[in-house]
Image 1 (cartoon, helix red, strand yellow):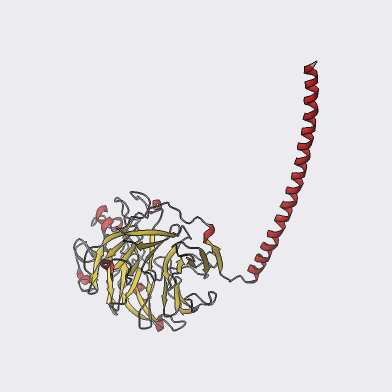
Image 2: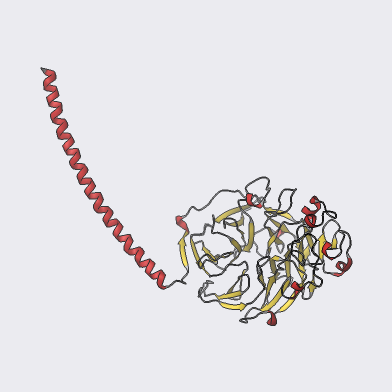
Length: 466
């Protein structure tokens, strides 16, 4: 009897409980539906308004709030001398090339591709922690060169040079209307980047790389002879000087400042010495085309990458000559009758002031004029080695930043590896294995050094804290 009464009692309260649960569920569902509908309506109106404005102003630069992104990627840990620290400014903005920093610490990065008005990226650190808080982009052209001088930001595509007026805050005043300084330069795909440097006398220097390995009749072809004289040297294979404040210049208005260069990417004006310096990318494939003269190990090391002190009228010998760091002299190229030992006409061309192992790809040169780093680094040269692709059977090499001490305008000691660990792997068999490849160098107003990477577009700020 008691069990029957208990069962009735349980059934009664279970029914009441379930009714209340069902009622509460219906009420909650209705409230959520109303909230979702209201929430969706507001953003739709806001986004529609922004899209309409963007369509009305298609050339306007874009801004992203970097504080909403992950501040660091943490995929590599840079190896630096004692007392130095690397801050990751941004984990990745895309295919970054060279960069420059204005007097306020804002970073302008030249991108290899524009990708919709993103040829130049500006990074701002608003709270002083070294990490970018805001990204702004402008410029509808890709390229490599970028510099700041006398109130202007200069930037290059692969065939032209532009400049942008800076305002009182050292920011680009009108990003959509640059002035065209130089136009019509050779761009045939190979070695087509246009690195730039400015002196203190109103001149801008532009590298025009040779679209060839060794000026053969058929480029990079075994058995093809070298062209002599090389017609490429008429409009490329050298550095040209133009006026920094004159519009629409081309070859007739410029001066071929030096010749005999295969390709230069690292280029800087040394203000203390009042001289132009440059880093040469040496030729390729000696063993591939001439296995009877060079074994594969020699080909992995030759020719040297060269540092040049560039003077007006300099001739560094390309395509007829290359520099052999083991023999310490210029050697006549095999396409022009060389036998890996003969100098011939190369005895009379200008020599490098320093040589580095072959194929390391020096892509940036920066003379340090700041005061943050120890005295050892003052007025010396930092060089970004992008890393090799053709040192087999040896492991690929480079992928680091080195420092060269200077005295009286020339290297005063051996180069030192300053920043390493960009690749994230112990041994690099191919450049595609590298997580990062150092590309550009710049100095900030506080004396810190900035390094760009063209794999992910990571930017590092290297500071000295003792």
